[in-house]
Image (cartoon, rainbow, N blue to C red; front, top):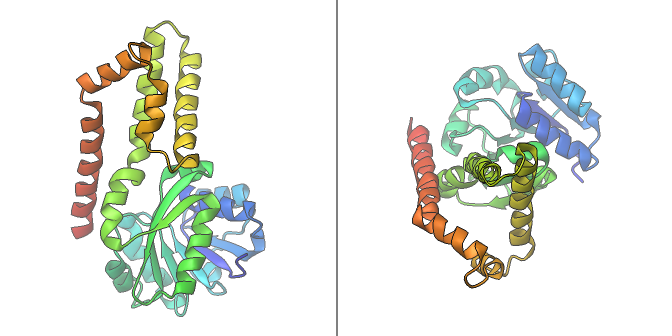
Length: 269
């Protein structure tokens, strides 16, 4: 179990999700701290996690060994200008979308121990998917600590930084595509005669259960699992034919590619 003190710059929803995950893994509240200029965010963080929010940046960071940067990218420069004097010798883990390792190094005043993370919103339900990479100065121990933190609220995978735009297009933006799919399934159920609440429950649980099958039976390709549902000339065969007629797979692939390309554009800006 991590023994390091962990401080959050930013106490919004993702910070709360990470801190709650750590608390669920046995990290005591006293080992965590946060700072957020928004009083409402600070109060919510403490209410949800039991961990204190300091009244200023120095109070949150000075005794921490690990700092989690959970600020929206447009506010990063301002936040780092306040935090820079307290960051020396610490491990910085950033979940700010689009901020590259080189940009984080510059903003932080030359920190070497940096881990860049692309999480996603299912972290709020303890079922996130996070991909991460380390700066050249990050040690293997640093990366293992980051992995332990990220594992507290879902699955995680180490990737080269060059892959993070693709990660953003798939797992970062992917929850929105899945929510669209759940709504479409439910709408179809309503059209076919189901009450709205029943259709939504059936749709959400079907997506959840199907995803668990893919994760738990990882050696089986999803196509094998799909074919096990399809009977010759049956109802599912006709439904899958309708998806193919609408170019369902191509539309989803194009959504991932478009989001990844946009992520790359934002990174250059």
